[in-house]
Image 1 (cartoon, rainbow, N blue to C red):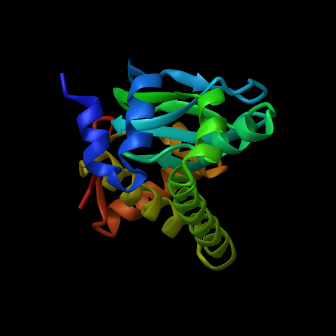
Image 2: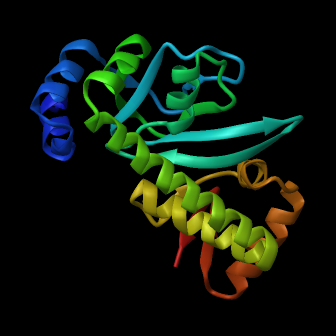
Length: 209
C-alpha cells in the first residue's frame, strides 16, 4: 500500500504544509474498483475527489447517449464537483472510475472552510478550471473543423495516454456513447482507421499503432 499522504505532499507541495496536514487529517482515503459510479446527476456533493492513483471519467448524459467531458488524472480534482459543492447545488455530471482508483475524498464543509483559510487551495482549482476550459475550446474546435474519423482517432490516442497503454479494452458502443454518435458509425470508422494503419482490432481490443 502506498503512503497516500506522502504522495500528496510530494506532488502538491505548492499547497503548503499547513493545508496539506489539514487535508491528510480530514480526508478519507478510499480505494474504488474500476467501473464504479461515484457520482450521478442530481446528487448533492458530500466530498470532492482528489485522485492519487488511477483514473476517473466525468461525463454528462442525454437520453441514451453519454458525452465525455474529461478525465481526472492523478493529483487532479473534479472542478464540476468543486463548483457544485461551493454553491450547494446538485451535481450536473456523472463520474465513474475508469480503472481501479485510489482517491482522497475531501469533505465539502472542510473545502468551504479551506478556500477562506488557505488561499493556496484556490490555485489547485484555478488550475483545474484552466485545464478544462482549454479542453472545452479544443472540443468546440474539433466539432467545427474536423471530421468524425479524426475525433475518434484522437479520442483513442488520448485514452491511450491517460491509461498508459497502447492497448485499449473498449467496446464500439462505449466510444459511440462518449462521442455522441452511433455504434455503426464508430465500427465503420474504426475499420477505415485500421486500413490506414493507425490501429489494429484484436478480439475486442484496439491497439494504437
